[in-house]
Length: 277
Ligand SMILES: Nc1ncnc2c1ncn2[C@@H]1O[C@H](COP(=O)(O)OP(=O)(O)OP(=O)(O)O)[C@@H](O)[C@H]1O
Ligand SMILES: [Mg+2]
Image (spheres, rainbow, N blue to C red):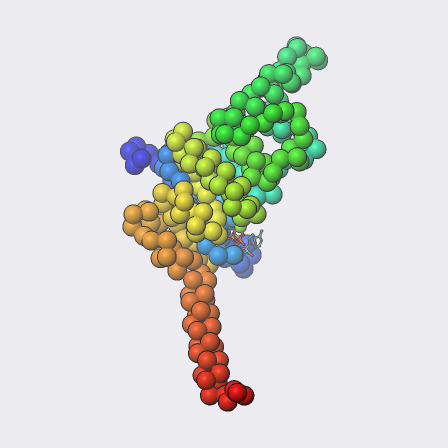
């Protein structure tokens, strides 16, 4: 995993929105064949960081290096051209359009037939590719011309990921892909994340859910109010420590202490109170 040059290096990146400091000097490294989980509570800066990596925002300070070379993205297109594909939770898909149309959206020129004015998407070929690519990840699409809106949330996430992989992504960024999913559908997506790693992609997996992160993650970076609390390899840390580190770990602990205290108080009054016989 750790030979050669990392796919992505985030070097001391800060981002200010007016007076709001969303990121304050964050560094992290992503390797090919690694699932790197980005954890942190609401407002920690996770989405801001990946928007910088995917060309939506520019860093206020710091550098981004792709395969060892400093880059300045002016648009998401620039990031895509460097092989960085981002799948957002609110997927950019059109529910009424077919799986195939969504799969090839913006890339119709890749499978065309006819020449000049008559050039158009080769629907049969496109259908076959869409079905094959989905089958590779264990999703059996009987009819790729069916509307994307008829798929489950997990399957829709998988279409987006399959599309990114097919079009040659080196880095796959997933922003909360499992947060709106039930256990079964989340496991479909998690299995696919593991497959992307097996194909030697680098995956940045953003989640609030430590259990989901733990299931597939190799490394874990925890953000807290725009700063990183560090990056940890799986063997260096436990799931409980991770939970603890995410802001809210302490709050939860205080809450359970309070609840225990409350329960003790009730037992006491319950014991003292004279119960009518
Ligand atoms: N475009 C923006 N303009 C102003 N402030 C912003 C902007 N985008 C993000 N912020 C602020 O930056 C901080 C980090 O936000 P960000 O969306 O990166 O957090 P997050 O870790 O993704 O949170 P969540 O888990 O809720 O998605 C927040 O305080 C947010 O309000
Ligand atoms: Mg976010």
